[in-house]
Amino acid sequence: MKIKLYIKIFLSFLLLLLISEVLIFGIFRIVSQRVYRDRFWKYVDGSVILFREAVEGKLKVSPTSFGKVNPELKEFITEFKNSDKHSEILKKVPISVVVNYDVSLYGACLAAMQRKHC
Image (cartoon, rainbow, N blue to C red; front, side, top):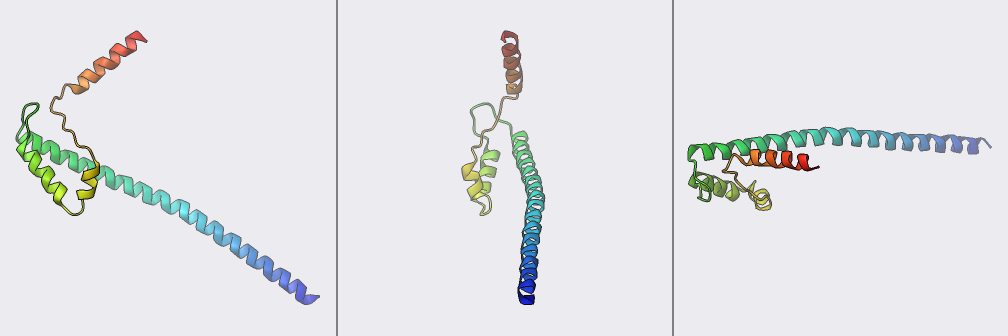
């Protein structure tokens, strides 16, 4: 009789231990993913800002008219594409350079016109 009682106590202890381990693992997973995700997006945002600044700097150094190839920018993109770390990323990302800075005004005018008609 006592052995059955001890076995029940032991099994209940193992069950509580298992439940607590699962809860601790779950909470750790949730917290660690949130921190990792935040750090990852801060890194990505910083990389995008640096790349954008580099491209805009190349455009300001030697501006070209619409439809012409900017040699400074072409050389920069070629070097970036040939680097080991960034070649796979750049192959997947479509790159377009806005030469006409009035595009934002056109978009704002279009939105204003669409708002009047609604």
